Image (cartoon, rainbow, N blue to C red; front, side):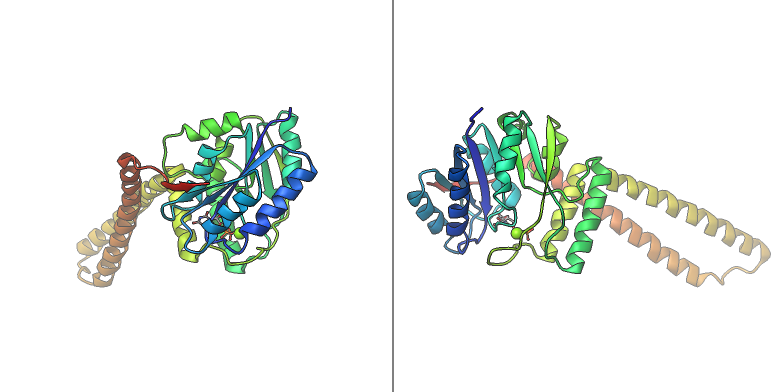
Amino acid sequence: MEGLLSIIIPSYNEGLLIDNTANVVVDIMTEHKIPYEILFVDDGSKDDTWNRIQAASKKHEHVRGVHFSRNFGKESAITAGLTYAKGDCCVVMDCDLQHPPIKIVEMYKLWQEGYEVVEAVKEDRGEESGIHRFMANTFYKIISKLTNIDMMNASDFKLLDRKVMLVLLNMKEKNSFFRALSSWVGFKTTQIPFRVAEREAGESKWSTKSLIKYAILNITSFSSAPMQIVTICGFIMLLISVVFGINSIVQYVNGTALGGFTTVILLQLFSSSIIMICLGIIGYYIAQIYDEIKGRPKFIVSEEC
Ligand code: UDP
Ligand code: MG
């Protein structure tokens, strides 16, 4: 089967890289005679990314682009890519060539053999700082446990059959997590390993703050376990209060009461902090419900080429 392959490339402030990425991918596709289109999704970049995409689209017949009215985030850029892609299957990859494009050939072959999802799994995490690695590992451990999907070393570098693309597009949720959802849907899946290359140029768009936000959002959008943990904390607190309560009654009976001032203060602080954490977690869920219910679009396209 010689189906059309759409290569979706979310790009945010990647002006330095567009030309090179387009050239590299075009060369590989031409060499291996794969029918393809490249779809750059400019996620509201502040540099000259959009001009570069337009230039690449003029230069190469099969390069297209859509431009967002502002920055909506990588997840939204992927959704836009799935929406605008015309292919019988698609591959999502990063603009910085950290996802080696040569792997697309292998992924396409597996698709031709009948696989509907081909996941590229990180063999190692490339050049990352120690703290980044630690946080990523913790996040993926939590999310793998909560979702029952092995997310360790998962990436957004995936091939999806048209069928799977449509299933993902028909999901109503706004806070999607592509990496997890594309496994969650099932289908005939296989994996190939890849080594994370170094970023070609520019720098990573993720700050520590945005990574923490992203982690919390994805954990809460995929599972209600944090709320259960809150409930368990509540029960533990209750138990502690019972023990302390009995203790103070005993002290009262023995006539040694009044000494427990420190205990009261400690308990007070402890319980109010637990309550605050709980309110925070509940608030997060409510914020998410609010976000979903507003029904706003995940992205706004202002230009196409
Ligand atoms: N990206 C995006 N929107 C954003 C942030 C990033 O489309 O708000 C794109 C970015 O251009 C790149 C990919 O997502 O193609 C991965 O980003 P980056 O390389 O900064 O992340 P890292 O590799 O450090 O995880
Ligand atoms: Mg990168």
